[in-house]
Image 1 (cartoon, rainbow, N blue to C red):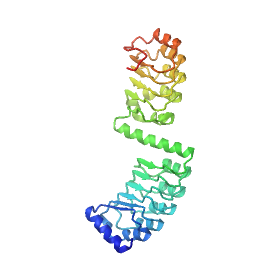
Image 2 (image 1 turned 180 degrees about the vertical axis):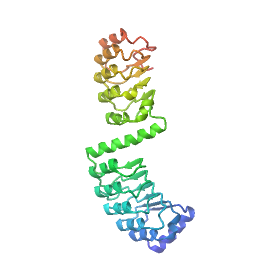
Image 3 (image 1 turned 30 degrees about the vertical axis):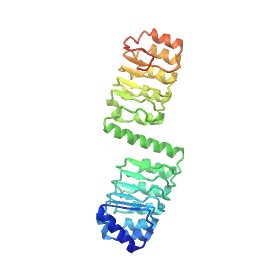
Length: 330
């Protein structure tokens, strides 16, 4: 698309919406990006989307230096040819200080570009950074996730890069921290059913300050194992809980015994362990637990409890306050 055609096209687009310009599958190249950067028509644009535009590093440099894009809120350069050099141009630009969304999906950015973005102080308002489908490895990812100057960041997209185990674990931890913080602010931290957070996610959850204020915590169907149950049992933040739901996980006798012996769960009135892998030893520990003496509801349906565990529960000297049957799905 030559400059004349591009000028006519963007004028037509901006007449419909002067603050949002989307160039979808328009091969404008670096020269087209330079034309946009130098056009006064762009002065009121707050959202700029260039999808499959053939933009490389030179085009990014032109945009980064533009005097007409200093109030840009969202920049999408998806499916282009931006490398570490272009990422560095964005990081070095003082004209993008108002950016809230930076989308560099499917480009050619590697660790050096990720680190340049991570270390810049020129993008203080970015809340959403999309780097999916690039070539970033553990070094760049971990720097972004643990050392960046993005103080307001809520989301960093790193899917389909070259992350190894360390990078993936760090990214998972980052996403869990952000998710739990959002739920905490919304007063919804206690309802985490079907989030598949696993033991690693639970360890992040147990560092969330708002947990200490909860009376109910529901973690059904989250892929939690014995390590998670042990961590829950050992957490002093859960001392106010009256209800703990752990149905549909992978907790076995070891985890059940930890819960039974926890001094932090004395206030529990409800404990739901339906659909786990608890056997006789875990059932006996719960039956003999003085820590769980205040329970009014105990659910142990669809576990691996045999006659020995069932008999221990039936004759429990401590579970005297139960209002419902121990087995079943109530």
